[in-house]
Length: 103
Length: 247
Image 1 (tube, chains in turn brown, orange):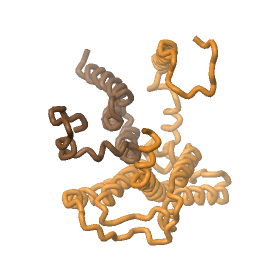
Image 2 (cartoon, one colour; image 1 turned 180 degrees about the vertical axis):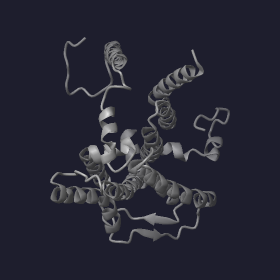
Image 3 (spheres, chains in turn red, brown; image 1 turned 60 degrees about the vertical axis):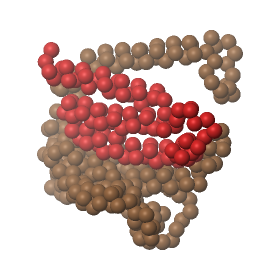
């Protein structure tokens, strides 16, 4: 088994893992970040197959523009409580011994 | 498992085992079928590659992907651009400002690091987009990639808030429609001159393809940038409404 095959296998397995994580991650933002990472890995995979046109398109549209669109949409739908959490408001709680959850 | 199916039911899955079984069975079946067909298919010698290689000298370009996209299968690309334009029009903001394309805003809190970064990166990205467009004739590259890069440069440039683009202005809308308009104009003009829709004459195909691809690049860049803006703009007033309905 050559180095090339090992690299391809690693690429395949990690894109499968990233695809899984981009669907089933805990928070929506992590899903978006993993999706962009998946796009970059798939770019390398297209390059390995010699389809450089598709690789460039995947990097520019799949990872770049789609990632920006997803983050913009996430900005629109995320709950307002998440952006209101500041260090002052959590430290000024009634029970200061409770660890901070949101940050 | 499927005793009384309620079509109106809209809640959580009641039988997780059944849905897991269905998902696993369909995914493994599809995966098996796809891998079997992939193993039986000789990708490097079969397919349409010999036909493309034979007639590439008539297409006006030397990159087979560009030749297929803009010359041999130009009709598909035309419809793709139309679909993209329809999507962009569908999500465009409804209120229509009769102002100019680019406005300078008087915001005080400019992000200085972002401004410095975009001064370095944006010109390089724009030049690289032009290179990708030009290189599409004989090596990997082309209108879609160049357009996406230009859109990325546009998003970066207008992230800091020093300028604001009005995507509902006449100028922006005509830039969005330019690609499709040029494509259709060239296609119908070729009906008159050559007798067929989008039948490029081998002598003039090169510059016709370059003309179509340049206008497509501008349109795709405007389309993607306006898509981003129309998704991200209404968040300022939409977030509280969404939160109330979800909670």
